[in-house]
Amino acid sequence: MPVPTEQLMEKLVALTKRRGFIFQSSELYGGINGAWDYGPLGVELKRNVKDAWWKAMVRDREDVVGLDSTILMHPLVWKASGHVSNFSDPMVDCKKCKKRYRVDEIEPEYETTGKVPTQCPDPKCKGELTPARKFNLMFETHIGPVAESAAKTYLRPETAQGIFANFVNVVNSTRIKVPFGIAQIGKSFRNEINPKNFTFRSREFEQMEMEFFCKPGSDDQWFEYWVEERKKWYAALGIKMDKLRFRAHEKEKLSHYSKATTDVEYLFPFGWGELEGIANRTNFDLRAHQVGMKSAGRWKGEDLQEFALTADLADKESFAHDRAVPGEDAEFNAGKLSYFDDEEKRRYIPYVIEPAAGADRATLAFLCDAYDEDEAQGEVRTVLRLHPRLAPVKAAILPLVKKEGMPERADTLFRALKKKWPVVFDEAAAIGKRYRRQDEIGTPLCFTIDGDTLKDGTVTVRERDSMKQERISEDAVARLIEERLEG
Ligand code: GAP
Picture 1 (cartoon, helix red, strand yellow):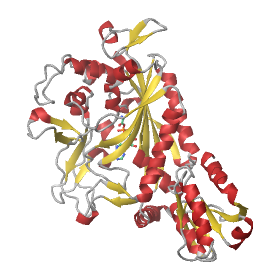
Picture 2: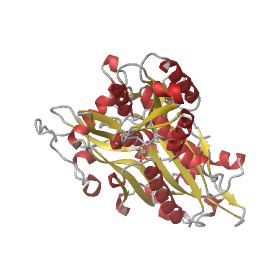
Picture 3: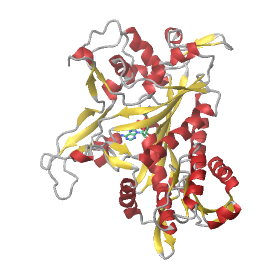
Picture 4: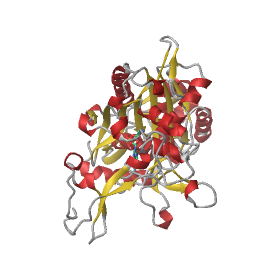
């Protein structure tokens, strides 16, 4: 029974709070905008999303390795990567109601026309807007006790740069050869002008990013390959494919580092929203750090906006990907961040394909996708139809009544299963109510221990989605859970 789109978000937000998936950060103090805490069930769900990503992107492959780099990095990393100069959104303020807007959100044609609206989009206000100003999204912080400029750095706005900065370390410390990837999951921070749509646009969030290094010239093929791989990942976790789309960016709208980008978008109740960007970043980043590292000895803590890198190739003009033709400039191809190709007996700077996904956005998409209402025994039943691999609780063990040895028997089964999976034991309330409690959090299977269990060792298994019940042997319970998790 589909839930009306306009009600879905409100219902989902209420459920996630009521059942301990997601809470507003610092709620006791009135909350903080754009920051969310994951409760006991939410942390399991999000961990399952991240584990599924890690399994598909690292564990199941032989050509991708993992990394866990720091949130705080050398400030020059952000100068070289282009974030100091370019990682900003244009914003305007309303002089009357004081609301702040991202220009591209209130004027969708802004990127192509450059037109900046002059009137507040709030129909009740219609006040005059200020001219557009660039607002850098990086959070500044200071390293050490003195807040002086030399110690200023940023909380990373993406995990990707930690991967590029470790490219040489990984090549030198492993036997991995191009083509190969480095994957990382971790927190990123952006001082978003307008955090909104629940966890969708937050100021602190987690990314799941992989940089896949390949030979220049093979990049277009690898790009197509990764678009397909990522499609398979979402499909395998049961997302409704009619709510997922892959949108290729028009050439004119590509970021300065990208040769091609395809966004993975999900149809949220508030409209289409990006879950992931898959980009052909060319050799932009490795080249940029090759320039950046040469300037490290010269930088004495000057303002990073003013400071010029040794050869400031980080600007669009001189450093666009279409200038970075393989073999075009020998100096770059022989630099520290180049790669020696054993087979070809030559050095080059690898091209990079980057599937960059958001763990919070994927979690939100799976939640929206799973939320459903139907009818059970004449009442509305709320159910999260999560894939068993994502479900925070894999099974519930329920003694039918609190007597006749049923709780003890159920407890033995519960303890055996708990060694392998997150399962729960629940003996409070009528059985129908207990089933409903599990449906609401997406538990795929419930096992009920009753009088017959004590006689013949069978239990009732009740399925979340169909609500069908059948009897199986107690010995078959673990295998059934295992099958569901593999499916
Ligand atoms: N390294 C490339 C990069 O960071 P991005 O498109 O800016 O690319 C990748 O970010 C993913 O990170 C997005 O597709 C989204 O899922 C997630 N993300 C970005 N900003 C976010 C925010 N403010 N809140 C939640 N997730 C965000």
